[in-house]
Amino acid sequence: MPTWLEALRVKLLVRLAWGLSKSRYLDSLRLFSATEADSAWQLLYAADKVDDPAQRADLLGQVLEETHHAELFKGLYNEDSASPLVPAKYEREALYWDKAEMWKFFIYCYVGEDAAATRFTHIRDAATDPRLIKTLDSILADEVGHVHGAREFINELGISEEQFQRESGLIRWRRRWEAWLRTGRNVTDLASTGFLSAVYWVLAPLGAGIARRRRTASSAGWS
Image (tube, rainbow, N blue to C red; front, top):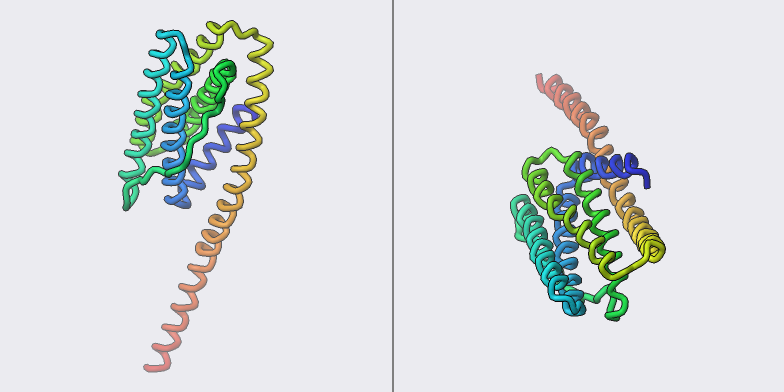
């Protein structure tokens, strides 16, 4: 998707979907927090498969940062929600089980972190809440480092540019398909919300006018 189109899509999400429905905003914060927490888990699993102590230390450092990001989104959620965020409980599954496929995991990290950095940048640019903007600025400072770190891991493993391009292309297509499925569900929900909002704004003044005319007629009858 072109950068300008993705930016427009995110702006519509932030200004329209979140503006029309606070619950959708909170759902997004919950999803962001869960995604960051899952990233931390995936990295922790991968660290156990890495032999190089320096690489393992780098991965564990990133685990702490991803966990911190999850807590930041959780904090925003709790500030705007009547009830505290309860993390979803589900059985996690590693993206790649085989130690020999760890190079694919690092390419997946590269693609995912790059996409997250782009998406959070668009959200920050469209956001008006200073708390959200400040949180995203903090997270983006880490995400950019994660992108470079993943690329360094890939280079250190001796992955050729051809392998990198082929695998990253497959991962991007898979992520786009998954995003398309999510978008289909979100558009349906947004259309329903938008329709109900339109009905309210159109019919509410009409109903108020009818009520005023009835009160006027009633008053005239009593006088």
